[in-house]
Each structure stands twice: as structure tokens, then as C-alpha cells.
Image (cartoon, rainbow, N blue to C red; front, side, top):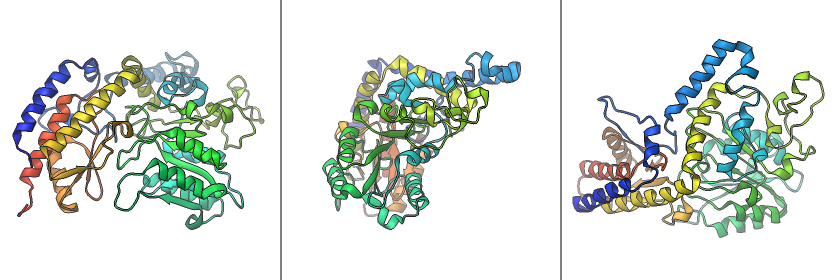
Length: 435
């Protein structure tokens, strides 16, 4: 493993890059976690839970104040009237999703939204009934898909296709995704694909997947939990039929926060598309007449079931204001440089001890790097624990991978340097005999 010299040079570069970072002031608008002694921790876990914007507390307290002050009148008279609350989030969400405002909606949680969307877009027939996902998909997505298949009286053993990387590889090739879609042909009803694969951090271009699915007559939907707020998206232009995401990772909305969904305009404005309905998806102009007939709200908002959880949605206003001020183009530019800096510093400082399974090509990744610690599960687990003791917060994925995500909104180049320095120190301290 390399000695301290590469780290010394990297620290000098980190300080220079931070000095020239035009987005560095955004860090001061987040609450940085601290250790038991009050020291600031090095937090590289925004891929799992984003940090709290300082303004989020004020936004939640404002809603609590309106509830206490106004009671039910808060629906119309609150500072941000609760009727229409989710709709006012749509323009900013649309910017991040690359969508039209009417194509997005803040509602529910991620898996609930995917179930609602599959109720509309997974309509199996006798010959077209299969769903394609990636092998090793996030467990909730696999549970979702297999339960949908069984709900329709089908068997996942025949209806579920799971595409794995080539033997010996960690990453999927786009040509293999497109080829598998083509091979499934008219038996394929739906492709449900990640924008960024949660374990490897591999980012996918959505448009080729959509084109391949549509070419065989299938629907194309996406789980964007690890993509929105992380990589640029163009859902409308890609032609994707639907998508869903959570808001507690890169959108910094808090644990279990309100999620979001996208439905392409061609479906959202089509009342013939079947759906599971609730009263909040009905026309706002007639919703409170309490009629027995459902008058559909056009767009993604027509998939709403109930009025939004205000206290859960309030932090999203605070976070989206920061995204608007920073701009996704500037955030992506910093993300590319910051992630590359962490990537190169890790490899220089920990040579021979780790491998990074996330794509080296910046176009195929966001800000997450998945670092495999060599030497087996037990050693890797010990290194992760040691890293946490040293004040670096990442997260762990079995059997041997530490995920580190330098988020451009609030992480610095010095954060990235510290993570590499402390991982190198943990590896030195935990080196197995004979290594």
C-alpha cells in the first residue's frame, strides 16, 4: 500500500480545489453530524440519507405553527396553504427530473408509488407477461415485482427475467440490456430499471432502454432513488412511461420523507389508462363536492390517493430551494471533479488493498463510489467499523463493500481526502498477518 506522500500531495490539492469551489457556501446551509466529543464527522453517506438543510427545521415549525394557530383553516389560510401543497413542489421536482411540471407529483413512499404505477403499466396478457429487472436489484424492488407477478396469478419463475453482468464482471453492459430486451420480444410486458444501481453505483442512460422496450411493445419504467438529485435526468425526452423516487437520499428531505413519481404526458392526460384511484387524484375544482363520480386530474397528479403529509413534505421545499440556487449543471460539474478526486486518491492511498467496482467512466456514475475491501468479508467488515470509529460515515453492503458518496451540495474536497486518509490508516492498522 502506498505511503503518505500521495496523501500529502492530495491534501494540498484538496485545499486548493475547495478554495476555488464556487459552491462551497452551500455546505454552511446543512447541519453536519458530530461525534460524541462534538467533533464534525466526515459524512459521505448522502446516497443513503441526505443531510438536513438548516432551513428544514424552520419549514416544519412553520407548518406546526399554522396547525396550532389555524387548525383546519390551515388548508386554505396557512403560509403555504395545505390544499395544493404537493402541486407547488412540482415545478422544482420537474426541473430535477427533466420533466414537464404536470408529469411529476410528490406523494407516498417509493415502493407504494411503484406499486401504483405498476397497477397501471403492468397489464399482463397470456403472451405478454414478463418483467425484466437487473440481477441484484434493491430487495424492495424485487419484492415489489414478484408480488405484482403473483397478484396477477403468474409465477415469478417464468415471468421474471433478471439480467446479470457477464461472468466475472460487476457491471452491466448497455448492449447486453438491449439484447436481452430484444430476446424477450413480445413476451416482455415491462422493463423496470434503476437510474443508478444501488450497490455498484453504475448509472444508466435511460433513452436506449426506453427505445428497446418500446421496440418490442413493452413499457419502460425507472426506479430513480439513487439518481434524482445525483445525475442529470431527462425523463420527458427519454420517452420513459413512468418513474418513481424517494426524497431522503440526494433530495435531503429526511428519513421516510414524501416520495415522488413521474408519468409521461401521453399517459397522464389519457383518462383511459387504468389506475388505482383515491379522492386526491380527482379534479381539484370539484374534489370537495364529495361526489360519487371520479373526475380525473390530468397528469401525474391523477395518481394521488390522499392529501399529502405536510410535515413530511415541508423539508422538501427547503432542499429544492438549494437545488434551484446551486443549479443542477453546476452541481454535476462539481460532482464529476469531486468524485474523480476521491476515486484517484483512494486508489493511490490504498493500492493493493481495495478495488472500486463503480465504473471508472464518469459518464456511467454519479457521486457514489463502491469500494471493495480485499481479503474477505470478515476483514472488510472490520475495516468498515474502524473507518466509522475514525469519524468517516459511509455505509456497508454485503459481502465486502463500503459505499462512499461525496455529495456536491455539502461535501468538500477535504472531506474526500479525509475519507481516503482514514481508509488507508484503517487498512494499515487492520492488515492481516502475512499481507
